[in-house]
Length: 403
View 1 (cartoon, rainbow, N blue to C red):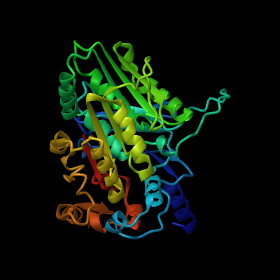
View 2 (view 1 turned 60 degrees about the horizontal axis):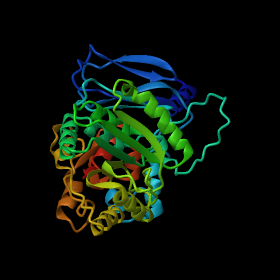
View 3 (view 1 turned 90 degrees about the vertical axis):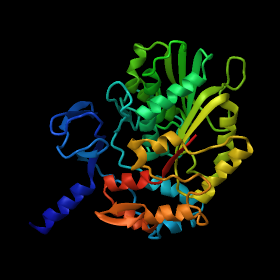
View 4 (view 1 turned 60 degrees about the vertical axis):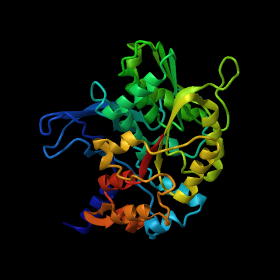
């Protein structure tokens, strides 16, 4: 093979566009197929014979000039990074994790639903060429892709465990004819739409309506949320008592009722809300405090990046009387034990004075190019060498859900 051919192969590999599909439960590998939509075309792929539920299939659908992640310049270990980044560095770490903007992101929901559901989430608004609308692009650009902690939360809410948990929550709210839920920092709407599917699958004769509000900043993000709701909540036409709507919300501000009082929600969910900086913590907590029903539930999916900074959120929450604990049912669920094995409370994770945290990082292993390394030893160079499956596993081992 000539040198020119090798260069072309390298260029093609670096510019390839992929779609990741998760193998759902209750399918027969080698017999059943997965279908997905790309650029308006419905495609089908046979599930490989050696696949198991939860496997991620990486399907090449074309080429792009974009790279999967920007090159990282640091080579310090993860343990060093946990104790050495400033606020701005935390934000950069978040952005480095962005995947190629493929146009459509697919997320297969949990096995607790009555049928397999794969969300088709637009990552940008359709370009029809006829609109003269100029959108407010407020935000940091992180709303245009599904993040691992959001995927984990969406799949946990729609798992059998999640459906049972939500059913108990609804029983606890007996006497309320209407159940109101809100997602904070919705982005593409992954978790809020998943919650809608979960609630739609639960039989609740005494509840006359569900209102699920997906919130974020910026006109363009709200328009994108509306598109994704319309595409992925088609069940609303058959379930008249369930409403799913987007609404702009900047943390620290309020969603008001017709009586100009802050609207109260039975359930507030959010994922990856702590990555930005400590300056956002007080407005975020004020929003939760203003909008949480006295008997309400908060479910927060956290991908730890700078634990010492992020612990400040939980300390501030406790001062306001909002106590977060590990979601016990999630940690005991067989579907997530291996994916998200951390069993540390928020005061322990990444704390060098915590023996159980140090042990977790030293004894929890991840693969880097088929080489096994401890989580503590992972550098940003290692992260660049991971394939998509290895990187997803690395991310999930740093995700916890608190309630």
